[in-house]
Length: 111
Image (tube, rainbow, N blue to C red):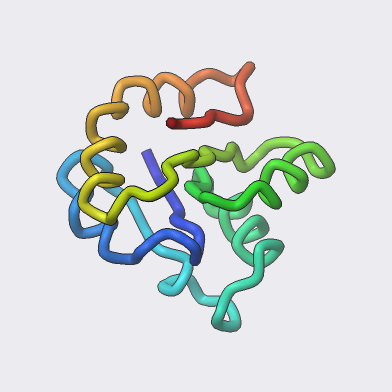
């Protein structure tokens, strides 16, 4: 399962979840002009089979305009630190895997 973290999520999370989510990258590490714009992240994710992980509702709008792929996971985790977000993602691993594999779903919100 390949996750691409948006710029608004700490790059440190990739290190905290790498044992549970192989193929996890941060948008700062993809080969586009930095800082990466939403549309550049979107295009890279689509071309490279990533699911986007974000706090940003703009990706929901892109999803409605452009359709899948990529799929989008929106974190609705206000006031949580990096470690808490990593722990939440790990605790939701089965849900995330099921979402990524289900061709009928295109967006997942995690609270």
